Image (tube, rainbow, N blue to C red; front, side):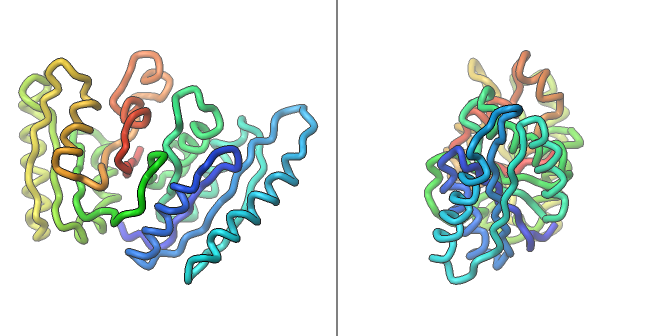
Length: 264
C-alpha cells in the first residue's frame, strides 16, 4: 500500500520526541501528510488538571512542529485508559498507517494501550519507534520476518510501497533448528521469488536461534545486515497469551532498537 496520510500518536506522559522525529522523517522522505495526536490519560473518578495539562502539551508539540517547513494538524484526546484502545483504533482507521512509540515495558499501561489500540483495533499497519531513535533515512534496508501466517502476509502487503523504494530487501526465515524450518524455508523462497518478480533486490536469510530466543536471533541478524526497518506480523496469538507464555512479538516490542512495521 502507499503511505500518504499518517497518524503519529504521542503521549503527554512520556518523552515521545522520537515518535515525532520519526514521523517528520517519513514526511521528508515520502512527502506524506502527518497528523499528530497528543493523548493524555484521564484517571477514572479522580479530579485532575488533565485537560489543562493536555492543552499545554498540545501547544508544546505545535511549537516544535513549527520548526518544520510543512506542519500537519495537531489534535488531542483526553480519555480513560479503558477507553484508549477503542478510541485510538477508531481514529487510526482514517489514516494509511500509525506511528507509535515502543512501550518501555509490558506493564507500561498507557503506552501499551496506545500501541494495542493502533495494532488491534485500527486494521492499519503500525510503525513502532524505539526510544532514543536517531534521525536517519527509513526503509533503505528492510528486513522482512517471514513465517506462514496471516499476520506476516498482511505486514508484507502493507510494506509493498516501501519495498519498492528500498535499496535492499532481505527476507528472514527460521533456520535449521526450528521445528518448522523446512516449511518456513520453502515459504521464504516463494516470497523471495514473488518479490524478485517485482524487480526488487531481494535475498533470503536463515535465522538460527540456537540457545537464544527467536527474537534475539532476529534482532542480531537485523543488526548484522544493517536493517533500518523490520517488517513483521504482530501477535499471531493473543497479547494475553504472549504475555503469560512468551512470544516473538512481545519480545520484539520489549527489546528492538530498530523501528518495526507491524500488521495484525
